[in-house]
Image (cartoon, rainbow, N blue to C red):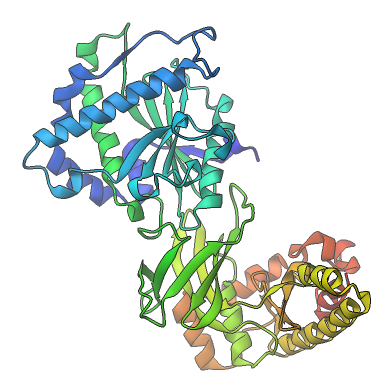
Length: 485
């Protein structure tokens, strides 16, 4: 399936309904009304689509240096109009964003750079990777809109937000083409698309006829720019990469607030572990952190809602006393269902580095390959014991690979249980009920779904020969064979 086929176009009200913003929009409309109609005659004018010769000194198309500049004038117009409205409720009288252009930062910070974007005021010095709403500008202004030509660039901007901002629920991207402004909303499933409307005046159009449309478009744009970030793309008013987070699991889904160093249950977030994430589908972030006095990892995972939560697996492993797994401090769900995906979190003991990294370090530091051999043999013994204990708990790991076990204090620990499967539901009725309530889990449906994808789960490079040859069943022997690779 191509990127273009993953998009769904909605009318503006329908998109707000998908994002859970209908009530917020209704409250806003009743307060703001037609306030922006009075500035319609001041909307900046742009000429016909510029030619390739009319470019800035840096080779950027005029869309970047002129159209974006005109949009900045529109934002200033809205600010001025809001300042004049003395009775406007406070939440609609300000925006938490600053509109910046690619000229404000070195282009190599975010190749290829977006033409502009809206960044939270407190993040404005962190570079283009921290834009809250990237903006793509093009001179194209005719219909139908040729999105196929631009969707790749727009998706790159969304991908940078996913990679740099683990607290993302979705990524909004503005697309200014000629006089019109559209909104893309990228989710883990694909993207939504809607029209904000005309925000600039084309010189060949009758301004008076366009006045009502300008007022409507500016009203929509100001609504989006005044939304709290936790309603427009983030799971809390935080970047999710620094500071203190309080994850309250007394509610479902969990609530995320700012924590305190004085609270032992606060997750002190240090830095994310750099890695790439896909533009759609499942993705995982590992963030170095501390929990009380313990060194920890905050793991955030977007997974399909029909996939077994990793936190459930850890709960059952803990119940059965399975050895050589990380200690789990907290787990839960932050987003139950957004576009068919769930955002799960785990706060767990930091268990060191992957075995590959650790072995390389042993060889480099000691110059004795025999020490690395001893470590590998001991790790295989420990992991084999863990997988055997796991089988006794009616669980198969199903994704044993070099990334699935790590070394702490010279001992192997098994991690990455997100692909695990239950052979059968736990025998303990109370445990089953606890998990079903905490995770809104239907055991029968979960077991059936996991069985259906049983043979295709895992990292191909490490899958057993019999699975790659089309075996009809899966067993502990497949996990053990993967361990030897």
